[in-house]
Length: 251
Image 1 (cartoon, rainbow, N blue to C red):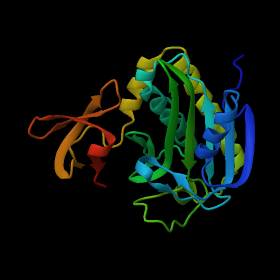
Image 2 (cartoon, rainbow, N blue to C red):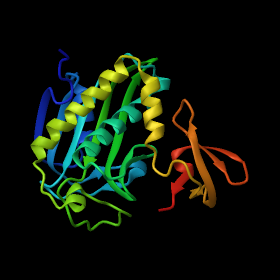
Image 3 (cartoon, helix red, strand yellow):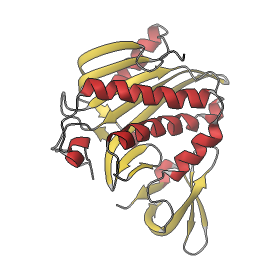
């Protein structure tokens, strides 16, 4: 029987600026067990990708960070962490709301139709050619129905289904999904992870409009390179390799 990793050690906080920052501060002074999960009822300064703010109403959503020690992974393969955790949240949401179109928007936002339900922020600590630890922050909209920030397109599970969800049950189910995908990564089955991450991409399979280095381009997703850059081909047949700061989806 596999031992539980995610959530095997819990730190509960009522209010904190950022669970990722809190975890990183703790790790400066001591090593924490793999699977340590820091969850906050209120996270008032949560961060998303590119310094974006993550809005979360107190007591309505899941805002937490989990610590893993992916020492089996070479640092140049760290994008596999984005893939496995994105797929774990994809699994959780897909099972909870069957029949809805759930996708992963590169690099690691989770979408329901054209709306963002979850975001992920990963802070890796590497020494030499080895991982020391990785702090994975997750914000998942569960029961919040009103958003006041300038975020483009937030959505919660309750907004989709009209149901009110038990946060503790959701956390336990999500931890199980995280474990399943982490065990898959540890087993070396990265081909399956790669294929599923690609298959579930937002706007896969058709030409769409992107903002690439400040200019609109119509292009189609063709894959990813080993460093996690998004690969596109334009209508004119030009191939683009995109870093996060290069590209913006026009939604």
